[in-house]
Amino acid sequence: MRSASPSSALRRAVPIVFLTVLALLMGGLAPAQAATTGTVSGKVTDVSAVDGPGLGGVTVTLIPEAPTTGSSRTATTAADGTYDLTEVPNGTYAVKFNKTGYDTEYYDNRASQADDTPILLDGTNSNWSNLNADLVNTTRSQVGGQVTNASQPPTALQGVTVTVQRRVATGGSANPVYEDVATTTTAANGKWAAFVDFGSYVVRFTAPAFATAYWKGGDPDGVADPAAADLKTVGKSSASNGVGLMMSANSVAFSGRVITGTPGDPVSGVQVKVEYPVTQASGVVTQEIAASAATAPNGTYSLTAPTAAGRAYTVSYTSPGFPTRFYTDATAGQTTTTGAASRESEPVPGD
Image (cartoon, rainbow, N blue to C red):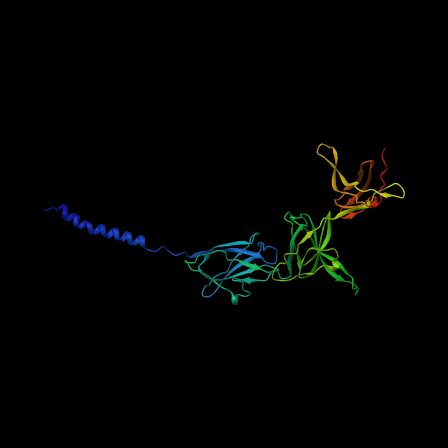
């Protein structure tokens, strides 16, 4: 028998190799199997609160809509308002957001499922991120703002006590009384916020060394009389921000007249200094000058110094040819007593 030549064997092998390569190519080009599940994630915020923080404890529910069948899927938002639903079967879903004390919402900002915007997971759209919602409290909202001092440039005031009050007329009297509803303090950035029931309120600001003031819209310094304060209305749908104030430092006034001899001739140019003691790190007590002025030709003077809780001021009078004289004045928070500092002072002629 004659054996096959190498050339004929090669000719038979070529079609086999070609078919094998073609099969491999066709298999490699075949489309990948479409995903059968997807993910849904996002964040829920509280628009009833200042700055719209994330809202924890919200139940997020995916409700199958025709033609999709099956069970609903749920998740609960974390403290920062975020949620994440994974391995959600492909289909059409309504997305529901609900929490006790808040209006229920459906995606996208709809009040009912009949008006919702459904989402579709079909393999092509398998990842729905930033599916967010804003919920509104049904009975309460936050009121807030920022407190600064009245210096230039203004700086934030921390630790200011902010009291939200309800103005109430009692016994048919035209003179209202004020009931405290909420109390908080300003943070390091001077900002504050408090949740209150829907209604209208007076807002009071108090701090040591500063004059108590009440919020009045359009007046950055506020007013001292609560009867002249504006009412801030807190309602549904959004927080009431912008209730702020520029607080003025409270001050103690020193005034008087310096005379000498009888019947009392005025002495001009007397240096009047308001000083207070400061204990240094070394333990040495020094006198710091809070204010100073010179007497006028008629012997009068007038100056002010800031109040500070527990600070005691000493007022000194010095002039060439006279021994230095002193009077003292104590201040405590917002209560000031000028006392002897407002009396006439008579330097004694020196030698």
